[in-house]
Length: 183
Image (cartoon, rainbow, N blue to C red; front, side):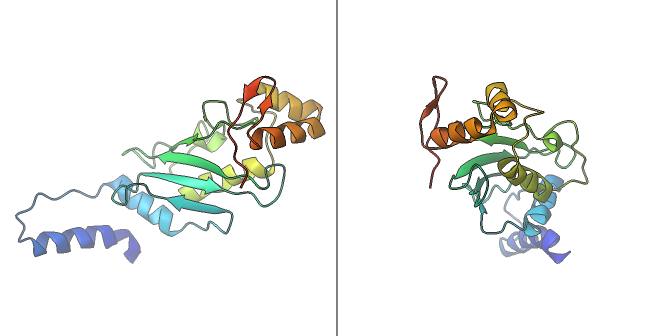
C-alpha cells in the first residue's frame, strides 16, 4: 500500500524542499491507479514495458516477444495511452507495426473484449497485458478485425501459419505489405 502513496510523498518532499514557492503538479487518481497497476505487473521474460517520457506513466509501450505459437520469434510493440478517467475508461492500445493477425487490423487497432464492452474498473493493466499475450498464443477468428486473416485461420490453419510467417518477415500477403517483426 505504501507504493501507491510514494508519488504523493515525493511531491510533498519536493514542495517542502523548494519552500512551497514552486507551482506543483497534482498527482491524479488515474496516475495513482496506474502506478499501483504497474507495481503489480508480472511480465515474465517475453514482455517488457518502456516509458518514452519518464515523467508520464500514462503513456508507455509494451513489447511482446512470444516464445511459442504461430508468432514465435516476433517482436510486437503496442502503445498504451491511459486517460485521466482510468480506471473507469479502458486504456487505448494500438499496435505500432502493421502485422497479419485476425484480432489486429492494418491500422494497429486491437480487438480484445476487455478493451471495449467488457471493460470494468476492477480490471487492471495486468489483465489487459495477459489478454494481449493470449492473442498471440491463440488468435481468435470468431471476433476479427482483420477478416481475411480470420478467414484463413478458420478455413486453412496451415495456410494461415505460412501467411503469418511471411508477414512477420516483412513480406506481402494478398498484395498487402507488412512490417518485419522477426527478432
